[in-house]
Length: 513
Image (cartoon, rainbow, N blue to C red):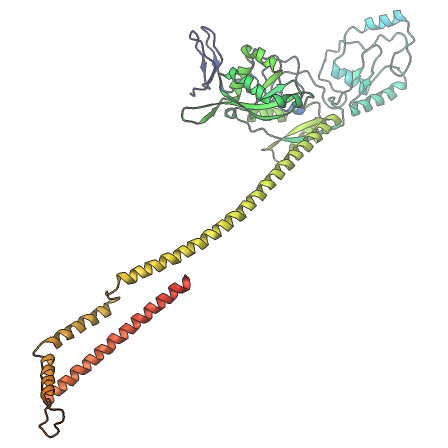
């Protein structure tokens, strides 16, 4: 149950609706039960005395003797009996109690002259007591006219058939009997075609309602905001949104499709059901408002049920030949999306052609707008690509600068710190050797003693005793010097490799920057 409401309910009354929408002000003590699909198809609305169809002539003419609520389709309503296709059959009066003529005097027709006097004409008019059924009169005019009672009746029969096939004119079939009006709706008219229309997919929760205004679109469109401002108080301040304004099939009339919605506390929009909006607008309390806006009918746009669609397809429309109707159903390109619609006469065909031209123009305009938007989007895409490329260049430049700074920082941080484990091992070996050299009892002490002896020995003395190292010590010194030489060579090699590595890193950094 939603809290969508229009107007203020009376404190003395109560209203119960399955759809949860309260429309208008309820009178004291009254209780009503409504359904979201109450006026969808075939429900009777006391305030409505005429029915409207959302698709004009596509679903047959409305019987003026039938009163029901405005629906998109009139299914299951009783209509006047239509003549069956083919000659010699009748669906009208079958009792046979009718008179064709009295047989006195000379016949009267549109092809001859009247020679009877006034008294004879009065007698002939009085003789025609009972009027024949329209379908029977149509068959008599086409099959067996008896106006002249001679070979001229055969000419008249062919002329009546030609008019019936054409769908225009009058057919005379008996003296002193009113002629039959041949219209395109008669079952013998040949200018009929079966077209296909899209099955409407409107749902009740979509809330789309179509109102018919008895003014041309040129007078309605400038007052769109005024219409919305007038309808808004009717729904208790709820938002009325006009979805579309277009010309109706009937001349000098306009169709407006709108829906009513309100904002919930959480910020979401909720639409009122189409059946509820239509039923509320057609209520007696809004009659004056609709009259002031020249609103002639309010139709909720709802989708067909399978039963209604089957009933529509099982009934040939507007006097069309059942065989042609069945052929139209068989040749339906997509029965799930389209249904057959009968077009009778050149006027409806011209109107259909006009609608197709307008629809094609609208599609072309939409395509032009889409192409303009695509062109603008392509231009924006080019600008965005250029901006992205520029951003990539800036990013690469900043990356190189950051890498250069990080490398310099890392070199500064690693100063005096070995780069790998081998260098650390060499450093520890050199420190160990240095400690051994610095011990007084080891090689350092021997070297100091030799240096002292060399310093006190006269420089020009050639004949004195010669001092030297013991053979074993000399070998040890030579071995120690060799080790030092190898160690220094290893240190020099490691340093050269490190210097080469650092030089390569600097060249790489300079090349990237």
